[in-house]
Length: 301
Image 1 (cartoon, helix red, strand yellow):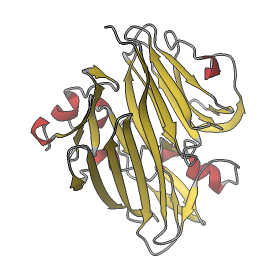
Image 2 (cartoon, rainbow, N blue to C red):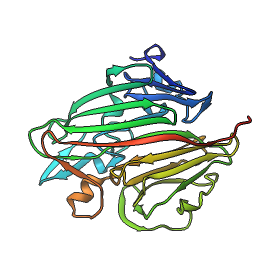
Image 3 (cartoon, helix red, strand yellow):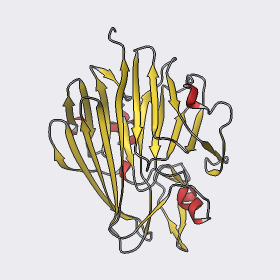
Image 4 (spheres, helix red, strand yellow):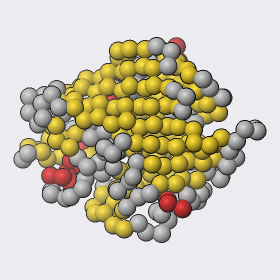
């Protein structure tokens, strides 16, 4: 099992990035001038190999949940293993729970690779993360390639965790939210209700959310007034959806750029429009970049 001695450290200017390739290719810290911009990894990541204690991890070859661990593709019923008991659904793909290999690494850039196939399904793929620091912050590029002999449904995303303070705000322009049933499976898109209008940068204190939003323009800002830091998230158009997870009475929240809606494989199979799910031909690659950049920072601490 990987431990803290396996952490790969990158740096550029005041930015620091720590990765643990052997534990889901996860980020374990991202900071600027000593200030954490993502939640630092907790001890459970190393003690129990629990990726949900990481700072961030990649979502491949799908985001969020596949209902009841089963999806239909081109008339084939595909079964997935239960990967997070007692969760009844398959969740977050496979990359977050398996080791990645370091293909390249230098002072401020690393490339991590992962390959996987799920027996009895079209999910046979290669994935790559390219992580680079520059003067603005972190650039993360995800690539997903169909390594199989036939077409493959595909999606990708990034699952960062952020520190939840009393004053933290989130600003994002979103077109609609996907309503969910009692099993946390989306049913249909609907116009934004009260409490889900993030264009006005509301405080997250008191909110409880676990929803996927569509029509995202690829830009978001998180502001911590306690420290004077504003972090900008800038994503390429492939990331047209945003999952916002604000669990009640917890000290973190997640803002996840993703390419498709939760349970998108099944929704697409039923003919639902605008799910964001892609179908890759053999050898075809889906890719996208997400940047995490300092937008504003108060000089005095």
